[in-house]
Image (cartoon, rainbow, N blue to C red):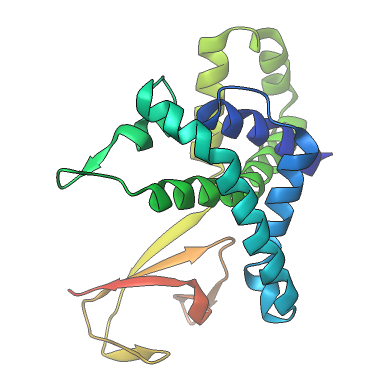
Length: 212
């Protein structure tokens, strides 16, 4: 249920920001599933990467006439903003516009699912808030405020910032005392030993290091 609902919500959001029209649901799900499978899954299944590249080409073909139309007649949507934006006085290259939209296609369903799951669990545990939502969901201002608070309270992705207390190494990367380490965590894995808190990290969760 939650994944189907997440698909439907994000499909409406993506299609309204990109093509301002309804997008065929099975087509959207196929693109999403194939593109995502071609990322980490392709390590064990290289053929998945070929499928993802094919799906990417299909999305690019789908977007081509829409991007050109937005350049001529921009509207109030994300694609229009990308199609008319400039960086250092130059238009954003076509391939970068396509890559950004495909990234959003792949990134949105799972994050939507996480927020929905956490929010629905919270409502089940707090019946008074569920009653409030049922009474006010037709009020766009109140519903928007509720959604914003759900995103704030249940962020689908968390970035932790930790300061190195001493010189060390993370994988092959040297880290000096005072450097800031940015970590992307889907769920916190923390230990407390002898009164000191530790965060358990995988190397692929390290997003970057800022020199102190």
